[in-house]
Image (tube, rainbow, N blue to C red; front, side, top):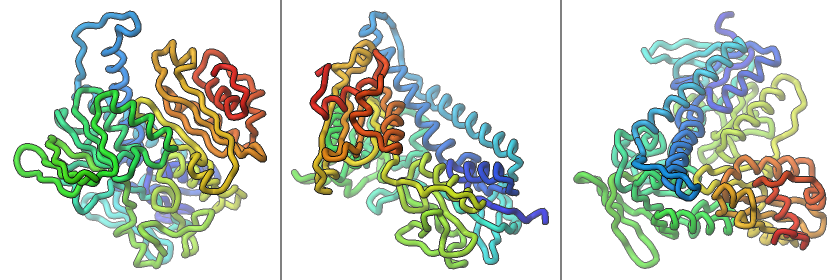
Length: 464
């Protein structure tokens, strides 16, 4: 009975460890299987360490422009190794914190490669090759994702790298080409550019951060160009020659082919799921285009086997994985959770200026045939933003003209990732634009720009 559990979770990222803790809270005997670091990619190689790097870059930028604030600072320089070291230290601290939470909740940690076998069994093979079998009433697969590789851009870990290597390079590159301009691409672009690396972004689609509202994409492009980055859109990397000391990157554009010399190429073209070799085919778990097929409560086609996070439908975001984890576990334990509303998921990008959004873009709303009201408030008109020296960007809101439903909210500017939750909660509660206008927002704050944008949508703007 020592190897028998109520629930076994494979993977300890923000989906896996949250599922394990919630299951323990609900009285279940739980184990987590992890082949690498506790906390998964997010804590160790994703969300957390990248934010530490971005904070270092932000501090350096403040120091570099201290004269704008009436302060004189001489001889400041970026310590690339020190920034990397701080980032790894933050990640280690958070990973230890998750280990503590697992122990606190009496969750067994099974270190090794987990594989689903018949009869609700999980085999765990440790680093020495020893395999042990465990059984459970329910198995939750939460194995996450990794850098996606393009055929023309094979990652070698040295000259063509993914996000993991980008966080631990032995020395700062002088020139870098970043392929892909999603959140990972633009965050690393900001970090490396801010400390002096010459950065070129290559994006296949017409706009950078292509999932965002077009106004946001265009603003970020203006900001990045102002910061000195080279941006190539509607462009495709067709080849990378890694012979010699650096890289020669061939980029195809509407004007023809162009060659760029650089030290490092960062592939940031998305995420591939970790579903290979974990026994899915052996037991008959159904998949489709690299994702495990699940219902609204993350149950697969097999009784007692569930899947959450990057490996199922929906956006590959840490907070989505955590929400799915709780819904999945509560359903297993006989609770009555609501299915996740995938139309109300906030997305955040932590470059400078930051980006945060939720709901429909203006283009999507128009394509859906909805009559809309659109409001926009620039941070250049915000007293708090001007006082803080952060006047780039804006808040944009989109409402259904007939019923007042808040369809979308799109922000770009300083600290906006901490502001988006207002729109998420308001949409959850079916709050109308008029109710937002009547809710007092404190002055002077960045958050009052949301109220100002709503006033603009309804023709009642005071500060424009």
